[in-house]
Length: 323
Image (cartoon, rainbow, N blue to C red; front, side, top):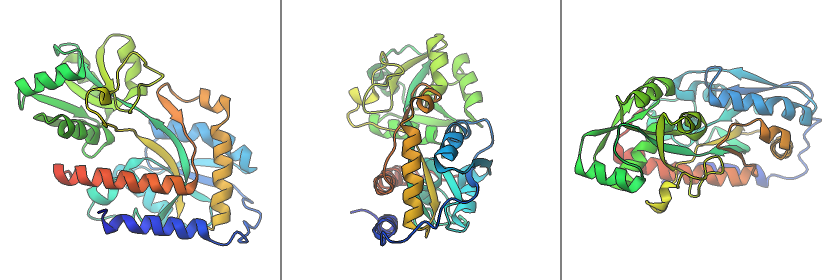
């Protein structure tokens, strides 16, 4: 049975999208919108938000201005949006950490991830990739599992930080494969990459688009992608699920708005967003390994609930807490 914590999101979404169609948008928008990125400039989420902001603004007829509000693993920016007026003018560029995993990682938040944010629609999904140091004598997921079982407690998996998506993906692999490996947290992806290349840490599961140049240059070895199927960006790399059936750790980016935003405004935002995501020129601007995937608000709400259920179970089994 799903936890009661997940029920309010579905109820809120149902109420949001079942409201009378007669609720007009009042000429929305009549001025610029803010798209809050809850991370510092220069990262993947920031870059992706900026790739959609200009064309989305053109589709809406008003500018969409990206504003960075980093801190707290993305929860500070999320809290700002959750507490903003529910008028459609302040939106959150959302990654898994603000809504899908935050309820189970943080004891004290300024917002309720389940109740205070409602989905506008999905933007993209991108596979992670399991990569190992060239010094590790394994060339497949099956060989890695066998090696880890033969050397219990000896292999560490790098991540970009405690409770990061790479940490959770590595923990998912540990549990799914039934191996005794340990977590090695870094302060960002860059330092983890450097130590992986140098052989100081043997493995990681992190963003395919970030690691693809290193894989192509032969600096690290790719064993498997974390999507259920192989990635078009690296079709020669098997899916981890080919060895561990059902394994999936796919980071999703999406847009949320403050709870209480009128349904007509949510619909206007969703329709315009989906039109942007279908534009070949916009698609071409995204990194290899990232797929633009639109959705309805209700579809996104169901995905959030499903992901909350999945990650809650993993986080509780592993005893992970955000620092």
